[in-house]
Every structure is written in C-alpha cells, then in structure tokens.
Image: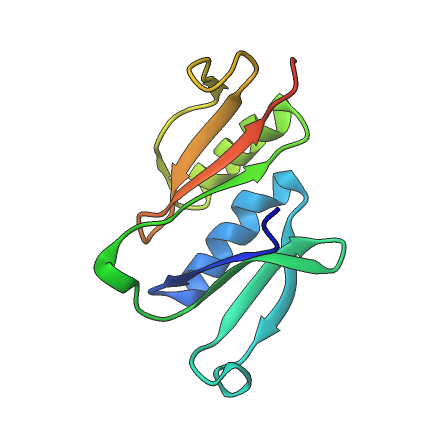
Length: 129
C-alpha cells in the first residue's frame, strides 16, 4: 500500500490550480500546504481526502529530467470521464481519452492527462460498469 507520493513541479501555483480542478471530480482536494521555511527546501501542496494528504507537489528540480506517472482511483466510470474533462479544461493535454484498457484487465476503465510538466496523470475505475 502506498502512503503518499510526491513530485517536483516547475510552477507550484500553476500546478496547484491544475490539480485542484483536475482532481475535484475524484473527491481529492488540498489538505495541507507547507512553506519553504517549514520544509527546508521548497514549498509544497498536499492533496488528499478525509484530512489525509497522499499526493504532494512541490518546488524543485526533477531528478534526471524524467516524468512521473500517477494513477488515482475513481469510484465510477463517470468520475473518470469527469476527471478527463476537468483536466483538459484546467490546461492539461490529452494522453488517452476515457475508455476500457482490456490489455490490463477486462474492466480497466481509465483516462490520461499530461500536466504542464509532462507528468502522466491517470484516473482509473476497476468496476464492471
């Protein structure tokens, strides 16, 4: 089980605005914010649910220039669709529209959006319909 994941972004304010809109359909919002003084290295924003931050973005350089892939669980296929629309409306780029991905398993329904840093953000529902 993953407790949390974090990734650096070039523009914290812009990334915060993107994720706030894109993750809202999944019931994920800002839970905590940390200043550079508090963290000792850069400001960060923690997104999550029920008071628990589990997805962090923060100021910093990406190691090796690579990109991150993160998948958020969606409660329904409709939530996946809403995530995709919200992500595009927030400035994300299409990286795979909502639909079944049977090469993973018969009920794998997902959508993919690239954020401003090129990170691949996915919403996935494993329910049968």
